[in-house]
Image (tube, rainbow, N blue to C red; front, side):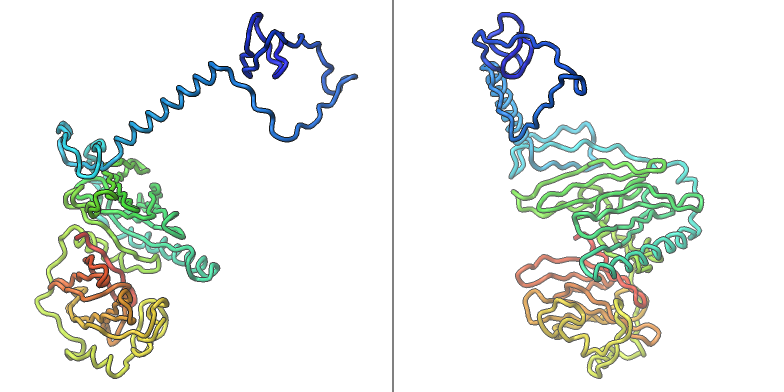
Length: 449
C-alpha cells in the first residue's frame, strides 16, 4: 500500500503515514505500475509546480517529540546564561589553585579560562647570533612597497575613509630579530595584522591576527606576544607564539565590564611586566625601524633617564615664542612645504574637522625625545569643550618641524618627557603618552596607566 498524500510505501495495518503523518483511515493508494521513463514512448511531462507545497500534517507523536526537544533547548540556553559573566585568570597563577566560591559583584558565576603552558624560547632562537641589522633593510623594502600600494589605493579611493596600513615591530620569539606586523584594512571591522619574520635572509609570512578594536602587547621572557581585543565592554587577551613557520594563539583572559562599570583590566595585571604597544605608525614612516627597542623599553617601564640638561635652539629660551610672534615657518610632518604659523591656526588647516580658528591655551617645554634639545608643546582649542588639540614644535638643523596631536588638554609633563593629558572637562579620563620624532617622522606611544 501507498500513502495517498505523499506516495510513501506503508506497512499493513498502519494508521498514520510514517513519512508525512497523514491519517490513513483505511484509504491507501494501490501500488503504481511502472511508468515509461522520460524519452520512452508514452512518457508524460510533469507540469512545473508553482507556489509553496502544502505543509504536511504531523502525527501526535511527532508533535510531542518536537515539543520535548524545544523544552530541552530552552533549558540548555538558560543553563548557559547562568555561566556567562566575567572570566579572568592571570597566566602565572598555579594551575592547581582552587577557584574562589564567592560570586563577583555583578555576575552570577565566574568561569576561569584554562591556563596556558609556558612557551619556551625555541632552541634555534637562543642559539642565533645577535642580529646584524639585516632585517632593517629587508623590512624597509617591504614597508616602502606597502606605502606605495597604500598611497595608490588611497588616491583611487579619494584619499579618505579607505585603505590604510600601519606597522609594529616586536621580537616575539626573543631571537634578537623583531617580527614585523603590518596592519591593513579599511575600518575596525576588517583590520588584519600580517606577521612577518626574517629567516636565512628571506622574509617569511608567519600568519595573521585580527587587529580591529585591538592591538598587541609585550610578553617578557617568553616566546610570546599578547593579542588584545576589546569592544563595547568586552575584552579578551590571547597568547600568540611562533611555532616553526607559523603562529599559535591561545585565549588566556576575557571579561565583560558592562554590568560592573569597571575599567578594562590592564595587560600588566594579566601578564606581569607586559606593556601595551598602542601606537599608530603609517607604513610610510620609517622611524620605528630605528627605535623599536626603545619603544619596547618605554612600554615595559624601562625608559631611559633624561639627559642631565637640555639646551635651547640657537641657545635662545625664547626661540619658539619668537617663531609664534613673528609668524615663522613650520614644516609639518604630514605635508609638503612649509606653512606660516598663522596659517596653521586657521580652521581646517591642522585638522579638517576643527569648528573654528585655533588659539593657544597652554605652552609647555621639555626635551620630549631626549635628544638634548628643548621642544615646545602648544595646547590649542577651537572654541568648543571637545576641540582640544596639540602642536609639538621641534627644531632640527635649522628647520622647525611641527607634529599635530589629536587630543591635548592641560598636560602634566614628567621629567622624562612623558605627558599625561585629559580629553575635556566632560571626560576627565587621562592618558599617558610618549612622543617619538625626528625630522618629518612622528608617532605617539600610548602607555598603560
